[in-house]
Image 1 (cartoon, rainbow, N blue to C red):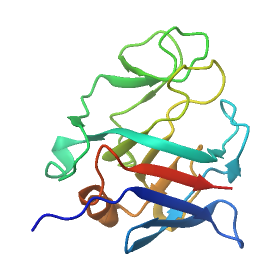
Image 2 (image 1 turned 90 degrees about the vertical axis):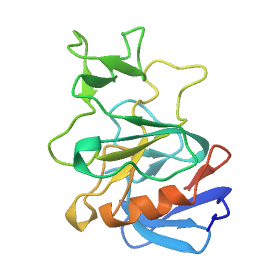
Image 3 (image 1 turned 180 degrees about the vertical axis):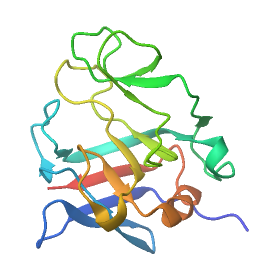
Length: 177
């Protein structure tokens, strides 16, 4: 059975806790974690805020050793042990996938805490890339209890594959302030 692709994923913050919210994709509604600073309109590197706006979903990454290849309409790439993501605004590769070892500040994509077992790359600060405006804004797996992220949106591990099945290259995510 072919599913109809969701065109817009909407993320609304909770009125009770600005670090949590609800993600709605068609008829699928999921609790989610947001950045420790909630949603922000003027995103800066390290501020802990999830950026408000409407963004394309660029691609998805997954850990092939932690589960089957997800079904999705997005471009999909396995995460490799030597994958990183530059978060150093002085690096010419800022806010892009970088090979490890990397001499500048970066995040490891191959994580032991399982948060990046499945990752959707959100088109935040990508064209043109503005130094210091924030990097590595993803939709990824949530920690138990939906603890806040560093600025990403995070959903339950058991739900991310259901979400991926519903999205494709024309899907956008709208984070509402």
